Length: 353
Image 1: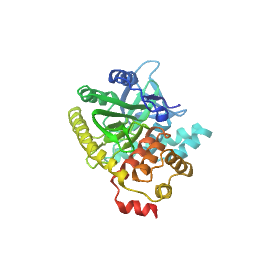
Image 2 (image 1 turned 180 degrees about the vertical axis):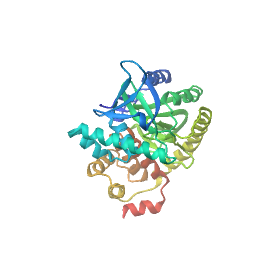
Image 3 (image 1 turned 60 degrees about the vertical axis):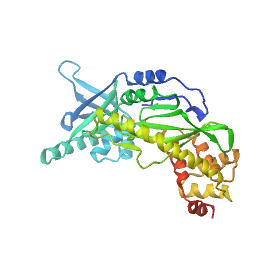
Image 4 (image 1 turned 90 degrees about the horizontal axis):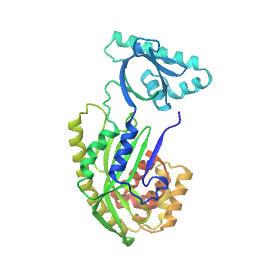
């Protein structure tokens, strides 16, 4: 099943400066939530037929429920049963009866092991319509994007803000918010500005933790740098309740804003730190991160757009090139770029050598 992708504000090409209102975005999140439901089942009540998960749902002619597995949920089920996901996918493409047998054997083994030991054989199935979105453990605490939106709505409604960007996919959700109060002059273009804010992320299907981190937005090129901070929220979906989640989110947003102000000062300070060989420095950094040749060339190309021979210019090349990446890969690249604001002079000397 092809993944659903809903991109809002500033994601496509990374260039948009158009902002939707929070009310519009909240409505989109609520619409995306429609038709989602969960059920918990133990291994003896589950089977796989023709590549679909089957379990009983009551008496009557249509007493079996069939659910399509996405690549993501199939891999999760395989992982729980100790089956290599790539092996299952390869077998399924050529012999679905054999792949069904492999899954059903794993389910029987898990049920038998649970009967002999204290190991749980319970699953949390997260669904939408006939699609099985996720197969998770019984310890997993569901937190939907609409739950996050309910908490955030109280925060963004009290202060002047901009929704920098939002992404909702089958596997992940993230949103970047800047506050007008925290605006700083861009050292490379004093007529333009930087803004600090926070990025919040979630996954309803086990792809990522609930996270909140500070980030910087640069107006002139719409670059973003996600900042690394020791007390940023990075919460697993385990043992979560509504009250504690609300407290964690509100405290983490306040922390992100406070750290964002400090990091903005650090970022501006990198303008004064010269780099003798910026292109060589970029290549060495890309090599240390094991970037592909194409990715490395993209960073160099981004540097040529604004070839400032200082730490600011090098980091800016990484944030600019991140705009060409999609989804979580963009966030990962922006997090790495943001981490370099805290690097020591020794790091930059080593990368330029």
